[in-house]
Length: 443
Image (cartoon, rainbow, N blue to C red; front, top):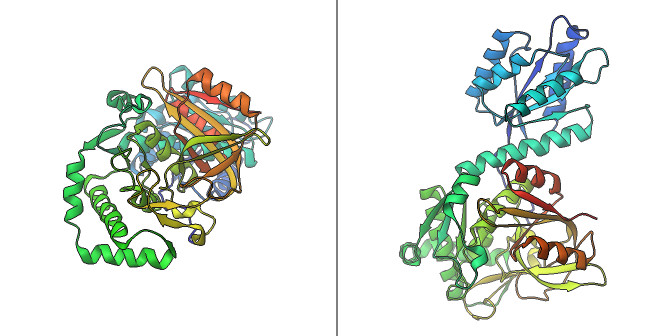
């Protein structure tokens, strides 16, 4: 099975070195630049734009800012070879208004560390987004990576257009969406259409195109218990959504699926996830936004689950939805079955037990003044298809009772998003950048 991560653009980081000619270690600025640039270039998932010159005066500061602005960097990483004047980075920020990383160089007499703290203080005082990084080891690079992705995702959210088909599920007030709050907090737009619009588009899809995609699916998935008619109907929805995504520049989709449209969009969500387009159930825009965030952090598809059962003997929780997970979330294609959706007993959904591995679970609920994000890391352990969907069993780092107490105390919701990998730190940082309360479960 293709386990390649979703091919997404990388954060674009402008890199420069600043120094003061009067300070000790100034003559080593070119060496420090070369060494630090090599370290940044070794990071696989960021794109580094190196400044054309070292920064020591106003002229070099402004020309570098202009160069970074022309290259549309997401943020600027400033390595301090020595202590330097903070007006140089302030002028740079005035001409290239992006977040900054101040990265100090470990040298007692150069004054780099105190200079980085000074820069950080000035930016924080002015309400500008920045962080301060010390050392040249992996911990420093991890902090740069996490911060770069937080800035990048915040920028992506500002440009995102999320599609909502229908309304939110009746009787599920938790997923009610305040579009003004979404726009104000995340910057994202909500594009809403009715079911009649997608039905019209579905019926315009050519038969040859649909059957070609069905043949492709059958070549990959051998365990198919639905009729060919069900499969073709599901793929008409997929191809109609795919066309709409291209035409309207859609970043993610949520559908009022329960109860009247169950099984119509599950296969679409599964296939679109591999193309970097998240799909959330039951008209839940907040869950969709969190899926978008975690897909970008993990550079891969994610789970969208309801918590279903607790195992107190090993402090694990099992969750699933009806079966719309990416094929990549299964251990093997041989474990995947295309079947009718539960309860409705019609349509097409994707069934498989989820693969094990380190995971991060998160939940986003609320509106402008009350947005909160629950965050917990855990370990997905092997499970069987004990629920007709994509069951995933996660061993938590805290007792189950304590987990439930925190969920209850903070009023967290029932749609949890799960990504493979540990993204606890960047999620906390991103939540802070968005003025959202992070609620962290920790041992």
